[in-house]
Image (cartoon, rainbow, N blue to C red; front, side, top):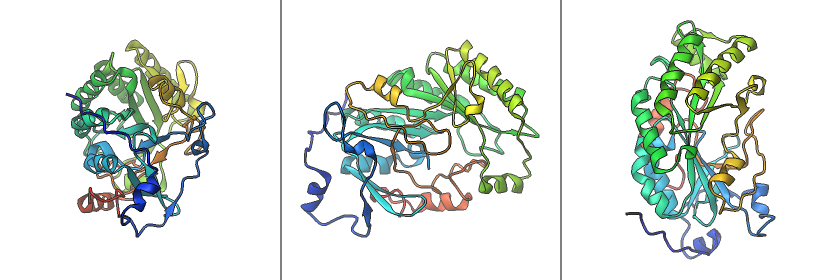
Length: 336
């Protein structure tokens, strides 16, 4: 049975806080400046916020207890990853347009779906399944188990609500384009009818990731553009065989026949999935060639203990493991 949605609380976040002592009084909060908060041109009301959970860590896999506590409390705080400034965001159903989840393991997410639905939240997910070698992804679940969880998510929502991510594509002295295509095909076959999109990109090796790969003796191969486009053409054809469309993330040089520009926080898709929610879909790229609309990411870097060697979000493996072990799920921020 679905949980009964809570009665709406129309008081503003600041008014609700004024009735009692501040729970996060050590934080100096920065108020949001997104133009999406200026108001919806159709309704004239404040535009709703899209929550990203999260590009910076894996909340569905490791921090769902914290996340659900934040929804029940109605707010979260998070640091700007560059300045360290602390921001606050309302998480009440009245203020949230939708939530975009990102994960390599949605199994811990499944038991919370009834409460999310019952509270009136809208959401879709990016589910990364690559079947990469264990020296690159030492702690991700077996791809068959992930595919089963993927299918469960799609059955409880729809194929349009669950996006498959096959990224990053990382070629090494031990991993050939044919290896990549073979892995892609068996995953696509398992997801046929359960998703409509697949997002891909070739790995961008930040200095910390390049260092980890070198320390493990993994020789990365960065093929020329022609070889990359040839591989993506093969993947696009395979995807089409299983009713899936290929999208390239932040790599516009790879776009072409059958390969579309990715918008991971996609205003058009959000409007299609949740037409009852007013949306100001202002473009707000997170990096060069990004097509995403504005969102608020409540995650924190250096907190995902999966240990993927190529990961841009961790400086090493020890820091996120320590962060996970010291994590307090009742605090307003994921870390700190």
